[in-house]
Length: 257
Length: 359
Image (cartoon, rainbow over all chains, first blue to last red; front, side):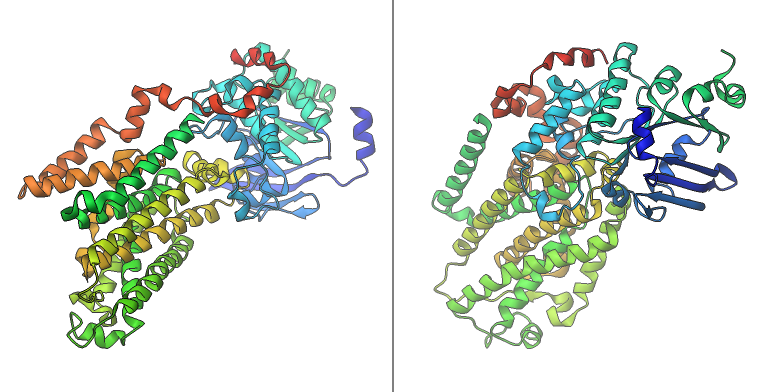
């Protein structure tokens, strides 16, 4: 992992947030937040509840207009772009409260998640190729939902829906994924499997990951660099071992361990 | 395989009954022509209201537009339209021969559909930024406004309406319009069956289930909604074009922008089962037959009976007839994989699924 990061460090970061501020009326949800994520890496974002992590995600993918600052993705300033446009550029997020298409089957959920990049309206009026179906099934297999492929997505358990949402995100061939608490609500035995799959998505499919996570064991293992938000401001950042021992992070979030 | 066969058989049966209809029940030919058009209306409404999850109370606009556009085109091919409508009822001097009637219909029906489709694209650009209830209310307002506009426009006869070209005595109007209606219904069913077999259905179902998520996936949601509404308007407009000729007289409030028909098309789709191909077809048939029976045997109370029927539909069949059947006999709707080819190629290591089962 370390070597990989080193040869990519010369590149411009894939995602760069500069001095971002987001207010809701008088409440400052994000104040002067800066972070960057290099291509091919896995970066963590931690912080207490209400510290502005999900707000930051919403700002990055264009769901909230930002008040100040800049967001750069693949060398483009994207802070004025709409969500769907940013998604087509290859920057996508999953939701903390999973969002899947409940009245469609798992396979249909996958097929509808195919990348819309460079696709025209007429492309929608085709049944979808065998290759696409095969990839949809492979990815369902990858997250362990193959046997559920023809079940309605709404009938799956919460944990399974999370896995489906992750598979849908992979189906759309993103450059970068913002994952909002991927392991929340997933049972402990499955978490290891999920962490392994996140790593494989990163290593084999080359997808850059920015992950919000409350499970410290998971994020310390997974991420090679971690940002910590508190009260909407960037409290600290560094490699996991540094963050784990940072007194400010311990006081604000981790508590005495 | 089995389901596909069943669908084809059902379609063939419908088509067969349709072709033989005029011989089986010659005195009801106009009613049956109307039934075919109602099937078109219900199917067209459902692509927006059922499959996309956008309840449009304004589809009657496209019906009326198709009707007027077709009538104007049919008349305009032969006579100056303004003078024709000013003569109220066509008078005796504005006669049409068989060729003119055929040419008029061949031009008017597709043109009516196309203009309705354009209207949907323009209205869609204005309204489809709105979500759910806001869209529904906005379309309701538009339907009311459009009827008033038509009733105030002298060129198309304003409030006193417009007579469609009168057929020469040697032409059999009811039979002609019956087969036009049947043809349109069959084309509509085939087109929708095709549309629903493509990824477009998934794209609009995604909007129905979670529009934010569809956007987060990079879908062109507004474009997809507009496309669905345009398809809806195309067929609704063509149905209107034929309906105007079938009725022979276009009144802006009672025929073209008839609020009752605007509600019926929704009820038929809900009765049969929203968001399915066969639901609106079955719904239209059941609804139309009950309506005709009420109007025949319960005259005076027909609207009360119809109102009761609506209440019964909503209370006992919230998911429509198709939804009810699916609940009762789920095996009839066995998941499509039972007849898919893909099942032969189970990826190796499918046993990994076991962990997911605990999730």
